[in-house]
Length: 127
Image (cartoon, rainbow, N blue to C red; front, side, top):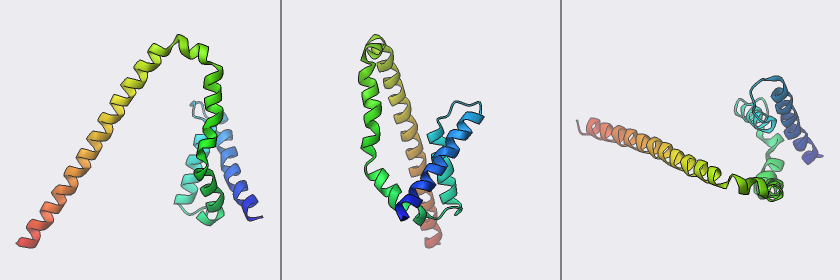
């Protein structure tokens, strides 16, 4: 019964996400909206972690199985992908460069900020 209740909560947020996805004019998948809603519910304590912990852990431990339908879909439409592979490769390379640049910049900024605060503390301790 405990697992059924936990599945109920997860499905409830998924359903709410799907409903919101139909209502709002922005093209965001309902599953993503549902996950964001579940995150906020857990973060703000509206839903206790114990109510979804076991099923959530099971789902994240077996996440690879959720990629099977997407992989099968890609294989089923391989002819379409073959006709646009050059553009896809270009987009993947540009996206990779953009993400690496952004992450590197953010990490460097955070590292500099942390080092600066450590050096300020050392100066304050020596004074």
